[in-house]
Image (cartoon, rainbow, N blue to C red; front, side, top):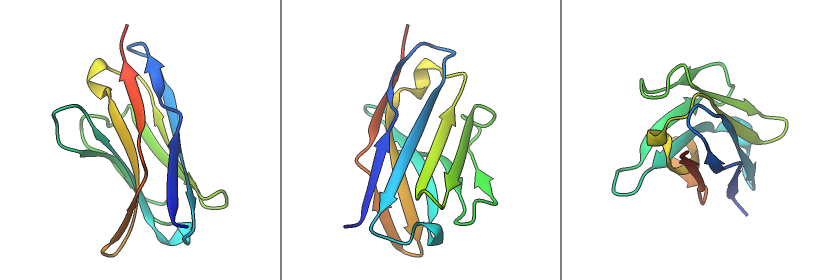
Length: 116
């Protein structure tokens, strides 16, 4: 069964940190580029971080650059998103995505709320 399961979301104060994890199963994880997206209420889903299948290259939008770090462990079939210096505008549901060519897999999402 092809599956991505996110974990690690929760409530954090502004300036705090969270580490999201996404565990993959049912496919050859090491052959897929991995990404994290987020979607806030009333807004479109947006890319926040991506990493190549080998883990040698990463990409971030300006809104999170310097605060978020994506990494992967191909031996554990897991991708991570370390989020530091969190802001209220980072509040959203965060989704894990696996992509190879035209084929994409999505997780169910994990809620991140940044509030005092």
